[in-house]
Amino acid sequence: MRSHFTGTGSGRKLFLNAVWAALTGAVGLALCSAQQSSQSPAPEWQTAAGGKMAFDTASVRRNTTAPPNAASSNFPLGPGDVYVPTGGLFRARDFPLAEYIGFAYKITGNQEEALLSQLPKWTTTDRFDIEGRVRGNPTKDQMRLMMQSFLGERFRLATHYETRQVPVFALILDQPGKLGPLLQRHPDGSPCATTPQVPSPPPTAPPQMLDSRFPPTCGGVLGMAPSADGRVRRGARDVSMKLIASSMMGGQGVDRPVLDRTGLSGTFDFAVEYTPQIDASWPPGAVAHRDLTGPTFMQALREQLGLRLEPQTGPVEVLVVDYVEEPPAN
Image 1 (cartoon, rainbow, N blue to C red):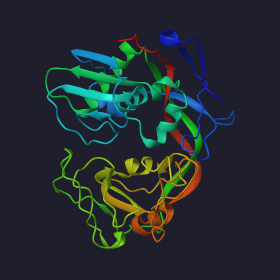
Image 2 (cartoon, rainbow, N blue to C red; image 1 turned 180 degrees about the vertical axis):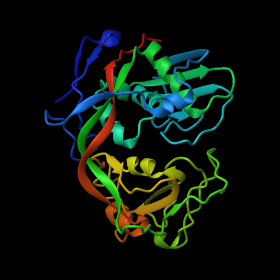
Image 3 (cartoon, helix red, strand yellow; image 1 turned 90 degrees about the horizontal axis):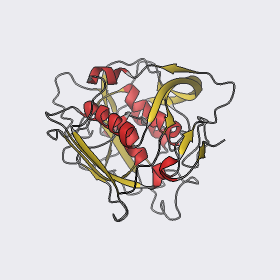
Image 4 (cartoon, helix red, strand yellow; image 1 turned 45 degrees about the vertical axis):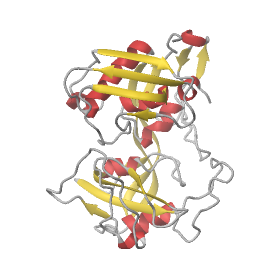
């Protein structure tokens, strides 16, 4: 099933058929009549950040001249807390509208496929520059609320939330009460800046021996230098198990949302390193230098973090897009 549209250009209207679709060649999550959904209130983070907000001034321009991979922003747009206070300035260049929606609504890996499957193609292919200014020094979540208002004004974006019962993976401890060597509780009182720092150095020993080698920046899942070419390494400091779980969706055999079922509260530091596996989404030659001696993601999850995934059915909060349209030409 696909989302359906009528009209073209700035009048193109989005009618939802709310489907899950596989975006990376992995098995998709198709909604069927047996799955249940119910409208849900806005997430708690929006209320905590202060509710509806808007930039004092803001502009958007379609970018048709930037070279490939030229997207940039004055702070990271991901769902974590990594942030550079900007004195009230938001500036981003050459991102698709889907990226701005993801930022505005704090979309996690668990929610990304459901969002993208609803959007018309131009929201992922056309690129835009957005700049907004406001007095004071807002937080990252307050910037998100301002972006919500801006997207509603300039792109006529209208949304609501639903909670749906869908196939999920439950993230659980492989052995009750035991954490892996690269998963630890974040030490109380440990300094933990959410402003980006110099990248962490590559490890000098196998990852399972490096229980203290985590990213220097706190609050989000970040890429790190692996111990060997042909591997992937990423981690975080001072994040919840919920964020760790949701970051696993979208690759390496994880083809459904991941819900935290570890029963662990508080925040954690972790790092995981694995050899990426070939699937249909990889372009030719992209994995020519894989380290075949490294663990798979599922092996690394058990050996390094002491966790595993168990298939279940569970509730996932979904951002439903009711309407969106292209802005006028520059």
